[in-house]
Length: 228
Length: 244
Image 1 (cartoon, one colour):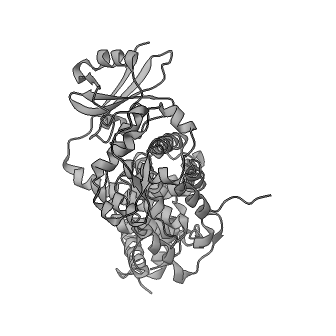
Image 2 (image 1 turned 120 degrees about the vertical axis):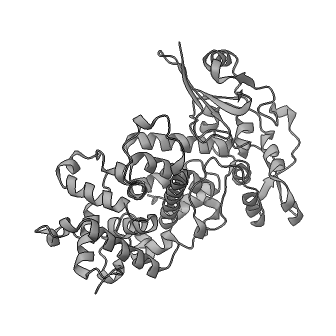
Image 3 (image 1 turned 180 degrees about the vertical axis):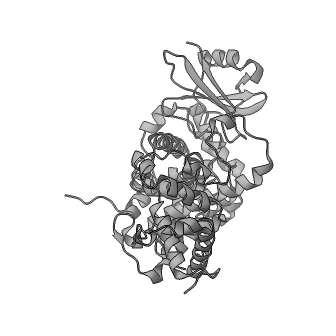
């Protein structure tokens, strides 16, 4: 029995011309990449655009991957950067005329995450923590893009700070600083939630993952790894 | 311990817990998955088309000065084939993939450290071409079109004209006379829309005088969907459903 190809092997096969390799590689990670895109962009439509941009970019620039990091790190980095590019472009276009299909789009007022508070796909989410989650996402949308991206990776997706730094292309200290500042701003926006009884016993931080084991082998991180 | 803004550790921890509880748990929605699958099929088709172009090993560095236009023209050497054939036709080799990327690639950074976001439909980037050549790779060779392949260097040389005001009539006529042998040229020009699907017929048209691509979806009982995208538009410029 042969073991399935590794991510690196699939990427190499894609670069070598295998027409199916990239699809298999991307398919392995796309749910997790989607989660990052969704929380970074804040609404499904823009997240889909960002993820597609990233997929196209990764497909075409696979040959530039040098293996200095895990393939998943590289993929996440492409996704995050594609999303941030779109957010920046959206700000540049902010003064443009409204699109003709505005009425068909989900509400976007209040920042990039406003649409994410629209209907979740999982009905269970509607019942459990719907209101609190919407509040958190709306507050997250008010953060600067870089702070939001750092918090999505570290606090929501559970990446160690070092891994998030590689994904974001900055120093670990920068990630810690962005996370800390972002949490502080969120604390101001969510002050009432923080003082609700029982909050300290709420859900624990998501487990981080070893870079080499992404995305299937979670590992709990110590406080010093989380940043802030 | 306090945060950068003087926030206490407990408060930071509480916010962290709120964020953790708000992470996206939903899998990729089916409609987005289908869209990505379509886009991936188009990418594979694009690369496979250009993989058929004749390529020449780059032996001398002076060839770095080759212009994007020359490289793009060379990728048009392949014969025209329908998209469906391209998707089912597996990759044709390493050299071809390099030519394909050169022909169709938007801005491509040279390092995985520079994994910037996608510019999927951007204009071809001469620097990307040079990056590949730096790596001792292959570039598209003789720019002279191979007439035996039946392709043309200009996908719009004999393109049908479509006017927005009369688009439905113009496109109906186009369906009847569609010549799908322009996929390679459109890919080389960076004008193969991401919306293309394996069973589409792809036709070069001039939309109000602008180079554009029409994607003719397979005809169904409710008619035939047609998307027209001008090459310099990011999204389809026209979407029509032709009556059956």
